[in-house]
Image (cartoon, rainbow, N blue to C red; front, top):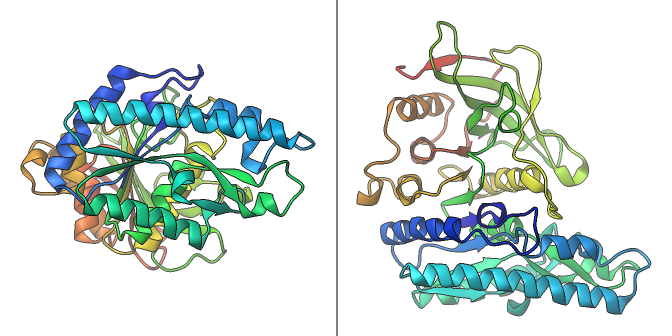
Length: 384
């Protein structure tokens, strides 16, 4: 499963603005991955970016329309939002076709997808309908390309909302299809390197190379236990560059007002929120929501799975993470830091395959590790 972030291929600050050159680069990377995996093994989902978020926010579609709004105006908003995301889907499919890929568009609303809890999850019937449409395309050798959409929502239908609708995000689609299609890995391609300890460009901003979750259920529902986060630091004692392991904290459900925290270096104080590039209209939770979906997904997929987030524009980087050992991946996932990361993750109880995928990917990996949270903090330089 590969999710192409809307912010990667569009300018989210301006409505309906495509970044064509970036999209063409992404299509080239997907071609390398397609060749590595072979037909029938890859599904793409893309975000709406500036094609849909503006309209969805204006008409309040996440909860079935603006409170007190008219049903007809809300229906018009749904039409405009659907038209916008389908427009972007057309651009994506044409770019993939130009690269030589047999892309086929699948619009969730047309496939029978419906949600509950205001778009937070697909209903069993909606998940089944969408999965069958995707599985059929895969069986015919196509590359399915899905997108976020406006769909029927049972929670909005049970309220006084103008319309029984909500927004189905690409992240929820990835999570649902990865489970039903038994994916071994999921990737979110973004306009930032991955999960960061502070917004890009700010002092102390460092790339989180891996988020290691406990495979046992968390103490509180709607949360995940964070065994450790492995951060790529440029300043370590002695002036070296290397990896720092920050020990446990909790990742909370953003929909329930939860926080996403990262423990201090070597057990010190001063927790930080995970951060990402900020700010443009986003009705589906932003980076916080995306990471929480990936955490839930890797917990449901189980040991050996990996969920990845980062600016993976290069096909070699994707192939290295998702198809280790293939020829396209030979130049990626090597180097001292990658080997150091692999060793650290194995030491945290991460499975060999998941550790290899994380080490071969230049962004952030979410993986399963120890079953018991361990209070420790260690640092490893790039040379081990």
